[in-house]
Amino acid sequence: MELTEVLDLADKSGFSRAAELKVSTIDLNPQVRQMCADNKCKIYDTNWACPPGCGTLDECGKKVNNYQYGVILQTTGELEDSFDFEGMEEIKEKHNVSFDQLVNALFDKKADMLPLGDGCCSLCKKCTYPDEACRFPEKAFSSMEAFGILVSDLCKLNNLEYYYGPNTLTYVGCILFN
Ligand code: SF4
Image (cartoon, rainbow, N blue to C red; front, side, top):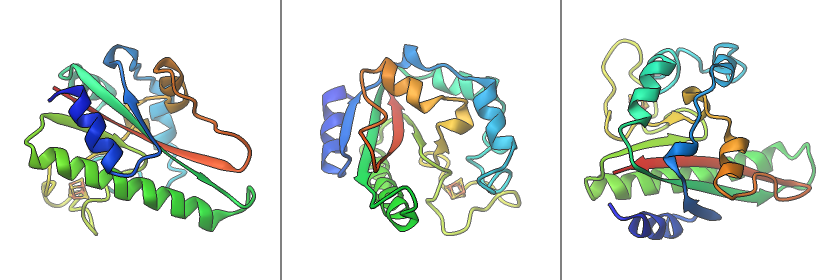
């Protein structure tokens, strides 16, 4: 697919920003991946798209190397204060809705893609992990952290801010494609 077409679809999906992601800037860092095993999110080992279900870091690296192009996607929102947990959830939900919409639009166009979201795959109400195979392996998405990506660094390397000022919060995802 053409980069301009994917950026156009991203704009229509409601993100605050979408920009080209140079695949060469992606660095898979074992320390970031280790944070998943610390299980602060409480979803480690519960989803095919999270570690260990999504494969080793080497296997993730091989998947990344299959792709030539990428887009980085951000949703920024404002919070009343740093304890506005409801506001945080709303921004996250908005980002996830946009992300699902873009993944589905690319899937409909038969795009060869690797989506990496903010948080684990949420395509099914309940993931089939570990008893049955993933229902939608072409669309399922891991988090960027599950692939060992330090999100703030990746934004910087692709000329995007990560922090947009006090009482703002930004969620980030990316999609690699050919
Ligand atoms: S598509 Fe469904 S089964 Fe597959 S990883 Fe996502 S939630 Fe799990």
